[in-house]
Image (cartoon, rainbow, N blue to C red; front, side):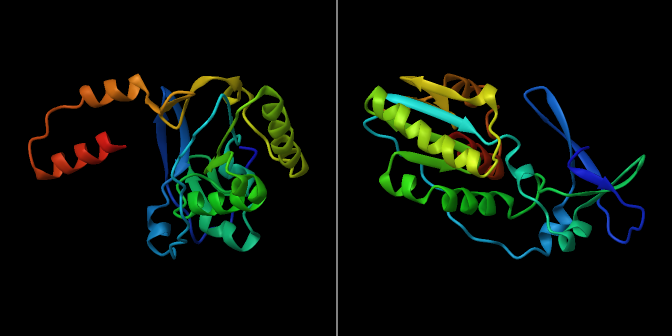
Length: 210
């Protein structure tokens, strides 16, 4: 609860839901009503293109959205109500409509030179970069870490992968060979039931294309 504080005076609050991912649960506010009245912030999420990579590194901004502070004026819209009281977020949480686009914009503004040089890829809170030589790899890593440290940004150590020639990133297998497909993703597609109507066909098509 270190990212939220107690608040007794309430005129706006939202219920919570429990989200499951990889057999782990987390409590998030059901912010669908808030998102209905939120003006969409349009910002491009990048296409992932990696070429001429020998060494590949990935890092993950730890609880990415929680690294953004919520302004006092906006906190009242992010109140959640639970059995033990009402709380409001001090930091951005999942479920906010514009959270991904805003975080993408912020990350792009942190690493403009690295992105323009073409060896760094930012996908929301995922940081991916590649190099042709070990010396180049160490140099690029130092540049990225210096910026991360200067901003007091936190990364997830267990999601850091350094100096690999092949690894999984964003649902794909990235290596010196052409971009591959994660076998676990293929299995998920094969286990989907046969579509029975037009809507199910559309859902399956979107799922399989991803």
